[in-house]
Image (cartoon, rainbow, N blue to C red; front, top):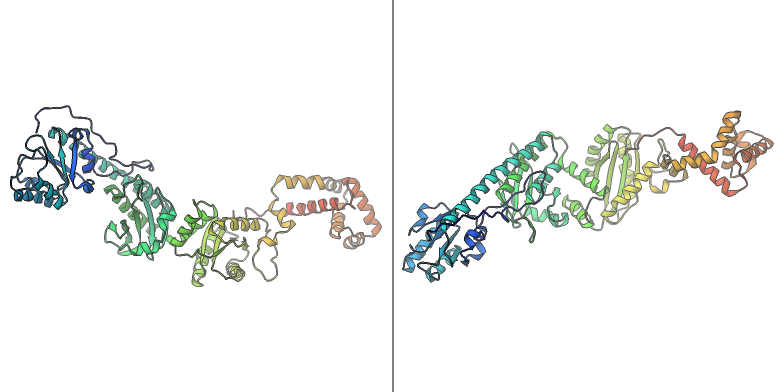
Length: 568
């Protein structure tokens, strides 16, 4: 080993801390590995060549030990990178094997031998012994200052340990803050995914994926065939890697009662995030499980209901990246999607408390009947229901049962539907239609015979105008067509508007108009001439009569009592 002194190069940290954007904190890194150390300038200057154990260069290096002893394992604890000039190696092959066996037995990370003084090529016995024990053997073709190697590597290891402590502290602080402000499971799982750079999933005891926050991938990839994969991953008593997929799993439980588990998935091949789970990733998952436990204790709403509500809102808002992502989320909750059709139903309740109570009651009622459905609050007084209809099942009887259940529970509720759609991604369209039906439904609107809900085909002229009543163009049109007649009636105490209404309702039949108003035909003729003069129109014109009829209907709608926001 050379005794000359060189200025120690600045430690190289590039590639040692894989990071992804996080919520105000660094993401998890990985321990220093044999490959990382060999890439350092202080060691790469010796032209290192990996002779054996190429596939084991990801071993973590916990320390560096330079030695010329024949029994260095006595002073090792495992994870050390052993540096030697080769001077102490025994001559006989048996002694070399014993030397390697002791290093491998103690768990040394790798053996680095300098080929400058005693050897110019590694001894065959040493190569065979290292290959047999799976110990990485690295040769150095040039002189290297081992003291500088230990200084640089130890500085990196200690720096990583200090950073790991700071990172762990930040993780604890982040989850403590989430817990103190009462964060729900959705926010906790999102934070875990962002901090770790891994996909994180919360599932219940029957292996339904309630919440999935993908990182660097899609929901469809993360949740594909979820139940089968999850059941192949056995539970563990503590946070650990489990199952054929190499999932990191932590149980969510309280006082011995298990509620589910939170799962961290390894990164898919080719992703920047390391596939192996770092100590910081383990800490993230453990703290996430703890935060979820506290959230479950504090918050009374079951996770299943919350997850279905959130899924419904995402479907309504079309917040999925693709139809396959939407299908995967629904399927991971144990709901069918293949060959199903879908229909949106909205229930607008008189009061907010009615909607909250009905969400739980209706979910339980439909579950008992075996109806596949997503139920969730979409507004303070609006409950959204998405029916998942198997092939051949008619929707009308199911909607009728649902509607009557709601009306019996809370009289005065308005139930509206959209049209049936054949794909899950089209559910948003069905909800838009149901929303238009609800907007076009006045309080106390009569129901069609034999039906307890409103559907798109019910929307006629009056209901269309009712839905558009806040549009200033409707208001302007009404005023331009009828304003002068209303002003005339107000100034002269006449009632020409009523006569006009009777005339239009009678489709231009003056005799019927006179009978409806209890007037003589001559009086009706006189009033109609006055209306034509005031409005400057021709009541014999079909177009003019249509315009006035629309304006009169709009006037009635505009004069109707205010109905608030219809649950929006």
